[in-house]
Image (cartoon, rainbow, N blue to C red; front, side):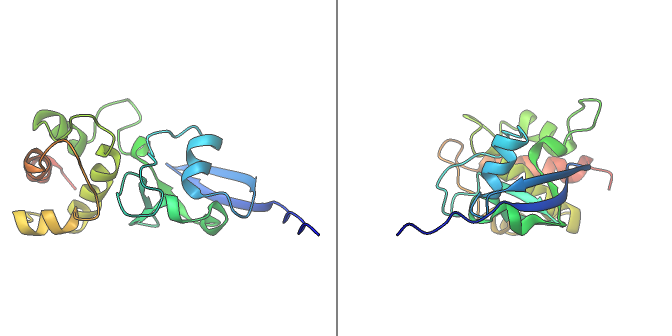
Length: 163
């Protein structure tokens, strides 16, 4: 006998400042919900095991891996994806601008995760040193840049961001 499919779960959450209500399958990942249901494709899927950091979002003020969380777990949460980083008028956040200027990206696949990890670090700390930056970003993997431009971008963003 085949087990019955569980019923959808109603969730209500805030994503990038917008209140969202939805009915989701219990096993729908948060990454798939953000990408497929909300069209927020800046949340990338890399390893789908929570290792690479491409799916990083900010969940109630802390970075989290959206590929290893269920959408139903986010009920009541406040989330920010990379789309929520820039200003409503389209101006780049100082972190995004610094990544651009310091060549902190190449193919760009890992960039959303790095941007949000840097956001979390710089929201909590000013003037982090190289070691602290590298440690804060260590959960994000990049195959292209060699990380130097990323570290320099975080330092530049720190100098410019008026918190």
